Length: 179
Image 1 (tube, one colour):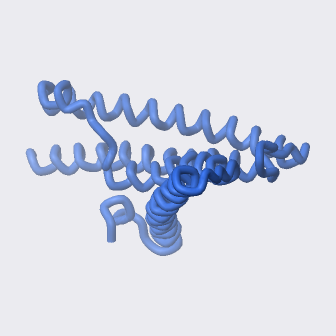
Image 2: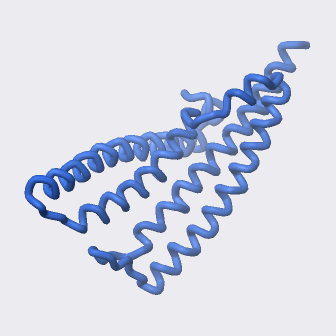
Image 3: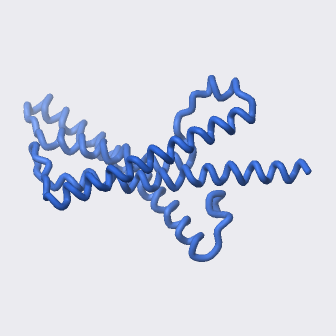
């Protein structure tokens, strides 16, 4: 049982565990995508260097794979707290200031995630309804690329709420121990 889901029982816990597993799965897919990117970019370089062949769709495919892999890896990174912190400022602050900064950052994360989710959903829906394609060297529906934004934004929102909830639970636990 993870720290995030320890307070839930029954169906609620199953939903949260499912969301965590989905984030893990997206992180795994992102890792596979990075391997795929290394192979196709290396292959494109070798083809161009040794045979003088350029396959334009490989470049475009690598652009889309990079875009999607970065986005789908972010919820997992947020879940495991693997993002980069500016330690110079954080280490100089006292514990109370650190908690306040974390709360402000998490609230900003919630607002940003909600905004991305809202506008991402609108954009994906409009391009789906209007059947707007992406036309470069390959042609396919644009909503396929845009639908990733509201999905990962919902996961971001979930993890930022969990982080705030955990910070309040930790504060309550610490206060109870002090009594």
